[in-house]
Image 1 (tube, rainbow, N blue to C red):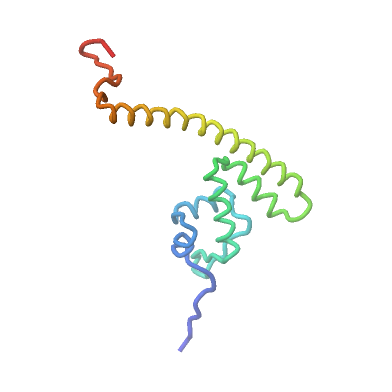
Image 2 (tube, rainbow, N blue to C red; image 1 turned 45 degrees about the vertical axis):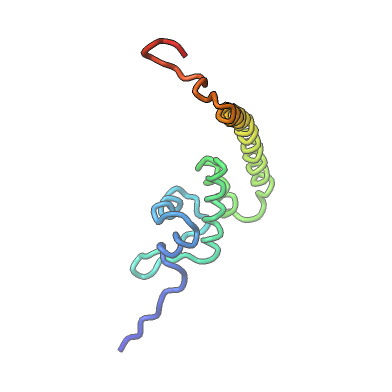
Length: 144
């Protein structure tokens, strides 16, 4: 009787579970050129993920979560896959993205000030018992 040995690595479903992304996302990352090394396949064509693959997927996911465009992640993946010698370009890419993230954080913090102000107003009016006097537009009467 022929013994079938299990393939090393994780199935796409297990890789998705471990990285916190969907199977669809894993396939997309591969199609979009975001994966540094080709994902192993079984003889039947099923993907098999290894620790290095999972770590890279987490990097891609975190970069996306910070708003890095796919084309920049793809470029970063290309640089990493090319190996040593392009570290300055990798650094420049990361520094540029960090500056973008800092700018967005500053904008979010500024917007948060408005939210905090509105919360303070509502709390104060509710505590004072005159919350019904808060501005509310009325289309029927035309008055705010």
